[in-house]
Image (cartoon, rainbow, N blue to C red; front, side):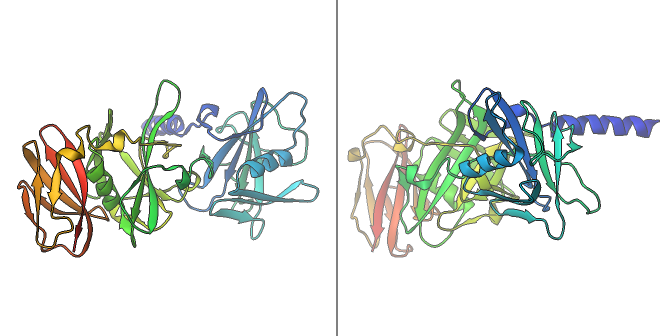
Length: 374
């Protein structure tokens, strides 16, 4: 009896955590007063194997299952499908790096009133989609039996944000990456509290180095890490500190639609056009707003009040400041901190030739300046 009660409790708890509803869907295609939902489960062993989309339409529009998939395909370049036998048999579905075709197994089709009430049902070209109904495609018909789609995650659009929208870049170099920081909440207008930084560098860069670059040039951005995990992170008035089930999740991708979760900071290395994402809570990093130039403005104190000379320099640099200096940090273009001191005259003989960022912290301000070591 005790085992039965334990099983029931476990099942109920699992069901509550696993539930995915219409409110969780982010990507909608079409227009109209009615909505149906499509879930594709690739069953390929990944933690993002199942995705959900929404399809809007009007009463009497008579959209078939195949037309529903065509609407998603037309709206999302990363999505594709292939149907045979007069659109009655689903042969192939692809989304980003997920792709399954009817060899060696087949896609099974499902319908339901929710993501927890699936039943087998062929919907590709038999009747039209219905308001409020869920339509699923799950790969694997004979392995060993057809299985309903697993709890999906909300599909995002691969074209919702790109590097061309960045107006302020941190660092220098031939390669560019985006860092998206999502606090897992929304503002009063329903916009996600998700922010993006653009960084430039040469070669490759680790996730930790990317965060160091941002911290070096953004006085309102700070974080702590331990055991290759982000413990806390704050930006302006937003913050998140790991506590219990709440933690910072790490992701890597090259657009919003193909985030791949990563276990720790040391496992993430970025090269040109790759993205690094951090999200507090369960939502994958969502459509961001660029951290504004005010955020990246380092300080309201004019840099004209500070001077660093000589510049370029080979042996020493001298800082002249109208305020008492609390700390000086020097970072290379990859965001690595190479010198920390509290003095105004700094020996840079150990640095290799190139450009560096000098962060000057005083009682009232933080400013960042560029120097060249020759």
